Length: 125
Image (cartoon, rainbow, N blue to C red; front, side, top):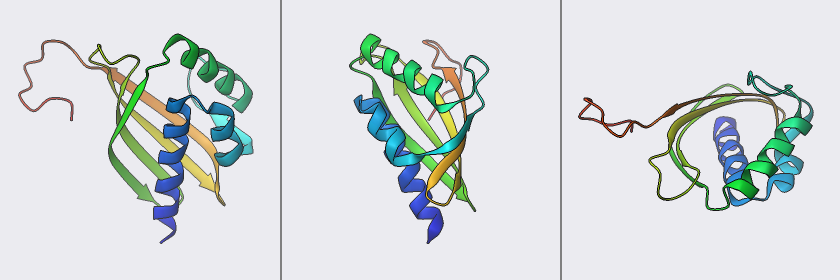
C-alpha cells in the first residue's frame, strides 16, 4: 500500500535527521521544490537543512521516539517524543509531510513542551 511507503519515508527522514545524517536525509527524501511551513525559517530546503545541521552540533544526543503515524493519500502525520538531550522531558512534536512521488514536497511541524507538572493523569503520549 502506497501510504505505508510514505509512512516509512517520513519516519526515515526524521530518524536520519535525528542521527545527524542530515544531508543524506535531504538527498533521499526531499524534493527540489520543497516548501517548509515553519514561521521561524525562510521556507526552503537549504535554510531548514542548515538549521538542522546547527542543531545536531548543539544537541548531539538528540532522541526521537515515534509514537503514532497517520497516512491519508499522499499526506503523513508523525507524532513523536523528541528530546534535545536525554536528561530533559522533551516535547511532543507533530510533523506533517506531503509527498509527490517518492519525495517530500511540503512539511509542517508543531510542538509542545512536556511540562514537569501536569494535572493530566494520562500524560502527553
